Length: 418
Image 1 (cartoon, helix red, strand yellow):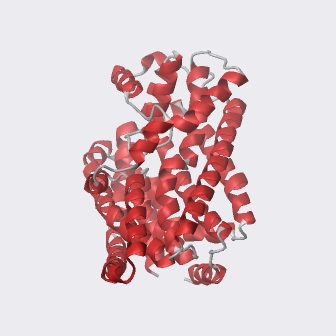
Image 2: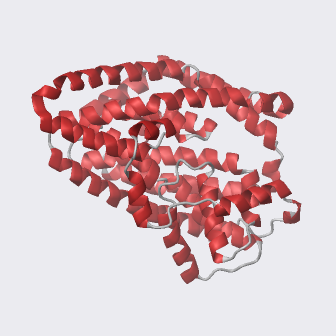
Image 3: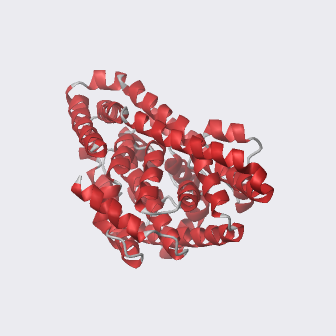
């Protein structure tokens, strides 16, 4: 019943936020700090929740050898799905031609061009070696303070392995972490009651600062991206659900709260604690949820990857550059690596896009245009990132023969009857 109320309140907040942004744009911009306050509240949950959940899952599982198998299978799944996301983004980008026929590109604000120029100079992982090095934290306190999920995962893995090696002497730590996990999930419930306020402020400030009219000017790219995201959900996510024998619409019902949070705040972090909680209730073991979901926010950003492939076409079509198929494949291959590990960078997708175009000598004006509507685009791709990572946990659990179908059916029935 609480989840039904929360969903209703979030939907009401979403609608009121849009209306407020249109009618009172000045006021709407001023309430943006309320959205940041909510996001900060969520961020303070993530590190202790992730640490406790993952350590308990691995240490309680007891089979250290299976950890390597799970990691290997997870990376294989991520790369296969990433390739499909790139292909869909490219295919629909060619079909809709989002950058063709866009007028008034000379009116892009100089401030946007300055920002984009700085983005193109922002360092991302230049090589696989740098990416691997950055996975290992020099200080777990720093990793938790910065919200570096992958570094927290690595520390948690080693910590859990050490607990397994110590054995019975580590029981007090396991008991403490079990209690911490329960407390953090209860903490998450309390924070979620502030979600409608955060959603209202996030949507209102977005509409108030950009104006609903901006969508009229760039409706083609907005339509193209959301159409591509829907295609990805229908043909890839639905297909994966069929493979692992879970009801797609039952999954949609389960993920409605975290998906609404991800969409309205354009923040994966806002939805992560709730999504992890839902996946455990859905039948995925703790250790797989704790490992796959945070790892996915580095290696499995399906919505962002799809967006990048389309954004490259948009930026080049805008200035009349016709890329050959060979050149497009080279760019896509490069994006598969440069997009990894930048989830913590503000406007990460645009940073990667700007750096890629700059290194190839292409104009950055397309990135400047996308910067102006990035919040609208980010809402869709962040939601697909979330759904993609939730489905990944189910797929890996099924691959490991650890998915609890009875638990899933009971939880879906409970959701449907509530």
